[in-house]
Amino acid sequence: MIHPTESVEQIAVRSGLTPEEVTAAETRLFALGLLRSSPGGGRVAISPESAADALLAPLEQDILQRRIAMAAARARLHALSGDYLEARSMRSAKSSIEVVQGIDNIRAVIDDLDRTCATSIDALNPGRPTEDAIRAALPLDLKTLERGVRKRQLFQQAVRTNRAVVQYAEQLVSAGAQVRTASVLPASMLIYDRSCAVLPLDPQQAAAGAALVRDPAVLNFLQQLFEHCWDLGLDFAEDEQKAGPEPTGVEKDVLVLMAAGKKDEAIAHQLGMSPRSVSRIVARLMERLAAESRFQAGVRAALNGWLS
View 1 (cartoon, rainbow, N blue to C red):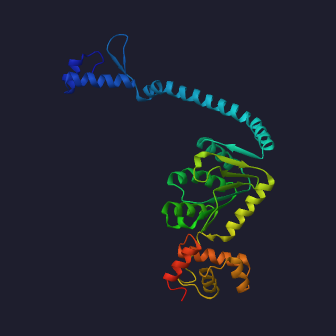
View 2: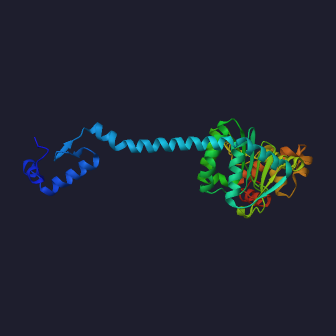
View 3: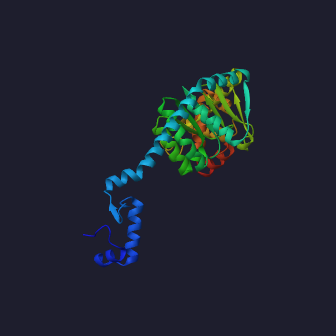
């Protein structure tokens, strides 16, 4: 048993340690609050429970004060929700088309529309999303779908060969979204609740800015454009090869006429079909051939021997 008034040298002899090791151990114990200086000289050992209370009490007090400050800040911000919604509605009413510039501002507007939409989101996504864009979009997409919002996402067919986009699409479909691909898409577009559309000012340069469109006539046109592209799309999970590698029957007839330069309306008239049905078959054929244009589809079909 070591007496509390023993010197460092005495403790070293009794414990088999060097004086330096004893001094270092005492320093650590004092820092942890497990040793205290006695008014009568020497040291007093403190129980670990008492030392923990003394050591952590200031930290717990600081955490409590921070939680109180956070709760107060949250309450002040929530109190502004009514003013924000009123200002937002006034902004919408004053301008049917609003220009937003700066990539950070565009992202903030899109995040806000994602969080506040109530019924539907329709999206055209030409090109190939970057992995950074996918990582940023996925959490918001999943939260939106959890709220019961209907989401339709249309990509270009080329993304079917991109692993990151395929995984992203599979996650969306698993969460309840509808995802399709089409050969050609006109431009990027987001439509929220059929009441607000987001369009790029410059399709080649996303950072150039975006237009928020709320004009009913323009929105109606944009929604019809989306529906047209959607009708031509192929479900992402659909087996593209289910009819076999080579088209037969009506598909073969459409392919031959398409390769001959016929337009959908002319093909429909010649085969006694609706133009929409022909457009869907053409879209599926271009998907199967991984073609970006009708000319390219004709060339690849010929190389495959499908036109013989």
